[in-house]
Length: 308
Image (cartoon, rainbow, N blue to C red):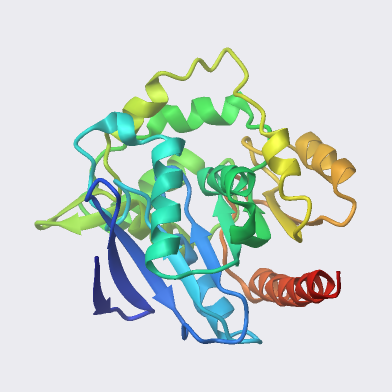
């Protein structure tokens, strides 16, 4: 079931998940645009607002393309789940597949930020024909436990600021070691993505119950590696974006990824941590060009299949 509402950027849609929960999707560009569609998946407690600069750039091209950004359940404008146990990758992967079917999104280029990248790798393993290219945004097959511990330390525990300016200062104090060169405007933008105005007060842009899903992780033990899922994407182009200060995706993991995929593109964003901002003409331009390269690779694959 779909409901549409035009927003300042793109169009906001709501898709019913299999259990009836309403999932928010922001769509950009024409559905009949010539380029491959792009699907953007935010991080653990992040929202589609993280793609506010990237999505319009991808939609504009060249070539023009359709872009779909999905708020996971309990995040952004998606409905909160009364059962916090459903904030897991299995349920969220099912939600993504449900959205792709509901919106008739064929093979697409996926931009997965952090947890969104994990979901992309899982999707590649169970539904490979859905993926025509991958951008892994500060995430890989190995997740550093130090970063998980840091995130678990503040998810669901941040104070409720009285203003976005106060929220910007909270974030600056918390994360300036990873992001030492962000401007005041960028910290303010980060605050607007972290809290939403609800009933006259600023509240987290996610269900704080998500923190309970992290509570069961033993940070003394390594998280399961996803090398098999990573290798399942070997047939499509891949771009990896890493923040130079990231404590989630290590430089050593990127080198191990590159050893398995010699054609993998890598961008390291200086002076930024987890996850680097998806903004700035240079970075956005490289992602737009990568998506255009996926169009070419997809056409070659189709031609080869037709000739065989």
